[in-house]
Length: 339
Length: 159
Image (cartoon, rainbow over all chains, first blue to last red; front, side, top):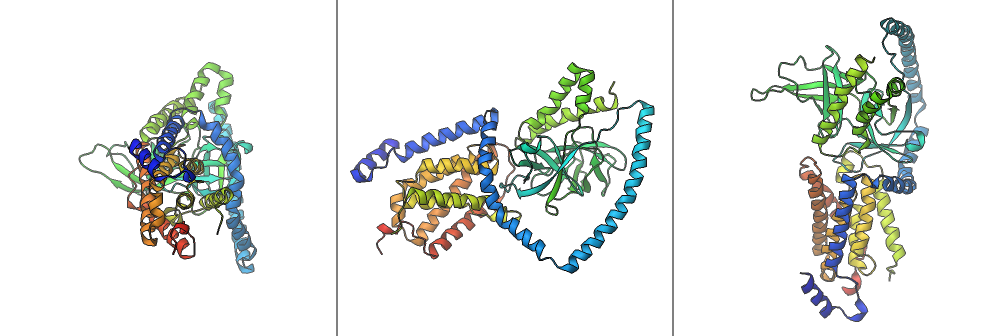
């Protein structure tokens, strides 16, 4: 094909209309180049730094592109009516009052909990620090569930951190750039999150469904004690998500006689559509604390733990299943029987 | 006559890239036309001596970066589709408006198809027919631009 094309080119193209190498040659060259790039990027980790640096260059463009919406929000806020502001203010005041009362109870409870843990000689639950961040935009690929937030490596954000909004967990940081980071939502096919049924403490792993905004609870037997409307909260045994955060509500349970497993579909509690601010919760330092006691032992655990989050999630789901399960399997033994 | 300078090409590509970077969400994200590739098609037809398959590949890399996918996906899709644009470039300039629009639609479909194949290889779900919606909006945008006086290589058409 190339030869016949070259012949054509020679016949048709006069000297003043030179086009360099033939189109077919260029196609082959650049296709090979992109194939090589794809292979390097998906199998090896060489391109992470390249991507990082290029994202740094891209950031000013991003700021320019975001300017119109920022301006819109700013002006909309400026022109929001007096009445609405007053209403919002009073609502917030009542909310603060309620939460203050709850907080007072929480203080006594925390104290009591600490004392009880002391008595039981159990490890203290560590407070995880968090960073407030704003959603810059939804991911550009409409078929993966990702968002970009405006905090990145310069703000000490690490991959693997949990992302939470006012109503529940929404995802996990999967890639960090200098000034922003990419968050994969819990509804993405490649993300798994260890959960617990609030009613009876049953542990399971929830997987994103991918297409519609739902989560699946696979590999649970048909006689499992789950009802519609059950609340799923984070179990906290993965060492990433703080325990007890709302994740999803069970919306549908299908039991088919030909399958040993029930098909359980859940609707996530937190929403990206509703809020612009999210919290990035840092990975708890219990691992560090453990390492000071048993260096070799916990180093192994650390590497085991870090594995799923080092790689950018965007791989086939079978892989993430394999990666996610050890996290859940390793952690409980560490937390329940630390010494 | 509008001069086909390299500077104009890169400026328009930058503009298209910023369009891509705009915070699209929800339904707008699903029907967002591929601004960058439309601009490349335009320059491939208009000034094939300045914008060629290499340009398409290079710009595709930046789109890859912006979408956060695997490096090279968009680059390959743009390369393949750009090849078909370059291969038929001389006939394309002679086409009338409807024929040109149809061919642009085909090019957009080709780029989306290549992307679909690559995505399927990397383990994406079947995406459904909605996946090709950007092609339709893309060709509508193309027609709109032509309607508002964008001259797609009109020099050789004469009329």
